[in-house]
Image (cartoon, rainbow, N blue to C red; front, side, top):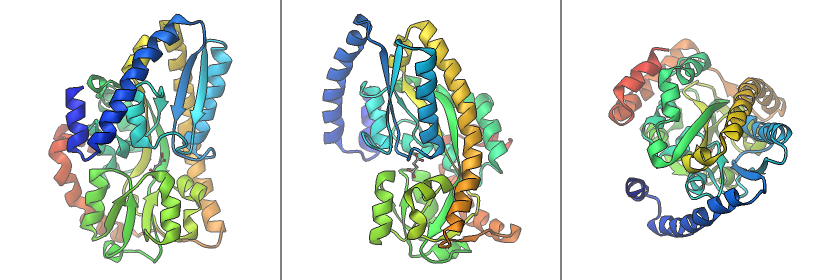
Amino acid sequence: MKRLWRDFVSRGLSTGRWLKTCRWGLCLAAVALPLQQASAEPIVIRFSHVVGPNTPKGIGAQRFKALVEQKLPGKVRVEIYGGGSRFNDEQAILALLFGEIELAAPSFSKFRAVSNELMIFDVPFLFKDRDALKRFQAGRSGQRLLDSMLDRGLKGLAYWDNGPRVIATKRPVKAPGDLRGLTFRIEPSAVIERQYRSLRVVPITMPFSRVRDAARSGLISGQENAWSNILSKGLHEFHPHFAEVGHTFLGYMLVTSTAFWDGLPSDVRGELEKILGQVTEEVNKLALEKHTQSRSKVLESGKAQVFTPTDAQRAAWEEALAPVREAFADRIGRQLLNDAVGN
Ligand code: SIN
């Protein structure tokens, strides 16, 4: 706990907010767990996420709820808090630790306070395609990462996909130098921040729920996201130029707290594991479909223009962003990076 506190403070989160959350969180955790065990009431899984209902994660959350309530009737109830209605993703990680929710699926970028290794998923051009990413996640290193935050009180349960991040801007962008001078909303990731600073972009970190307003007001002149998120927030209305350079994928770790997970009756935990296996397969298949459908819908709106680089143009992006990997190699771990490249 001491290490966690130190990390939150040193990584720039507000000490006041942290202490306040601690106080309330510890009280809640102290009363919530015994109460849940003592009563015959169903176990409640509060699942917090920040996206729309018609995105891979939004649909996955509803599917999880439906299957849990079908297979564990009266034993487990799922409450979904979507669209950032309760917590943004960084708050959700704290809320898990203090028993205010039981499940979240933040993008990897949101784990900055609790993991250096998960930064690997934001390193540009590390995975040559989606299959390489999926092989890495299914392999030994990827499976180990799910358990890499146990000492922080967090347990990864699965990897959920969205899709490749596409760079969206108010003016056409083809070469890395075209981004110079733009202001971008970014996710709270040191790797992404470095990526955009090296392209002479001014990065501003903000929660997903603020991106549409920031784009509409002109505060930001660009951002990056997966097609389904761009469509669900109508971001193409403000940033209609898209560069599909294939630098990273937006994906999630489905995560719970070890206190909650270890405290479950073993039959319930086993059934939840089976359900999660099924839902994960469905979500990841759906993510591929949503990627294509959402891209087409954005293009059909008539407002969007997509730049798809040639091999030579893509190589220029790779070259421009190559230093980012080296800059984070020690923090992420060179062995882990090598494992990723080897896929
Ligand atoms: C999400 O897909 O969960 C949100 C990603 C973002 O913050 O842009």
